[in-house]
Length: 128
Image (cartoon, rainbow, N blue to C red):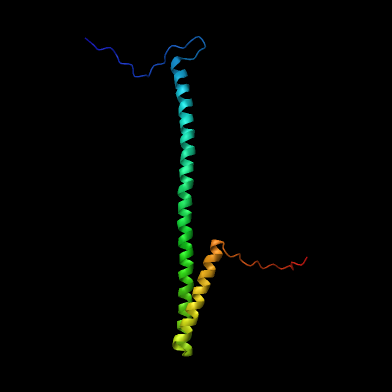
């Protein structure tokens, strides 16, 4: 005795009076529900990604500011050392340029952070 063939959904159901089947109506309804879920999930993902990007840009900005500060101090110390080496003013060039590098580093950080406005150089006079 043979088992009856199982329905695997591969055959088309009988159409209704308007030519559409119950299955296609159900699929259309499911497609609409899926579209609504996908739209809400996409909006939530965009919100999460924006927050993640803001964190990454904050870390990048902090790294940039710290690097500018350390680089200015390093350049000042290197210039002071070279001047001391060639001129023979052993500690004073290093001390002076190390302090100048520190001041330049603080000024660069403040400019990058937007605390101090950068001076704009224009070709025209700003007379009223």
